[in-house]
Length: 69
Image (tube, rainbow, N blue to C red):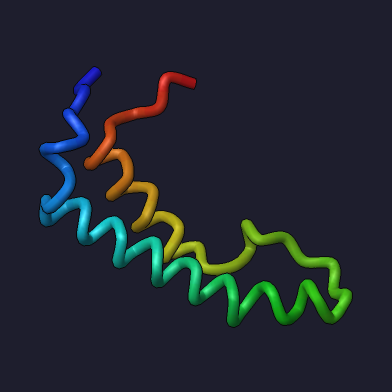
């Protein structure tokens, strides 16, 4: 397992890309999922913003490594 010191990540390019991907996912969920959910539709967040979520997960793994569970 690759453990990276937090101080090494603070200004890294990968971490910035992760922050950007997180922002894109959050905006997508807010626009696409949340409105339908609040309108009472039976929707699952997993059905929305799949590309954004996958990009965020990939960058998260590159930045922090695999989760132990």
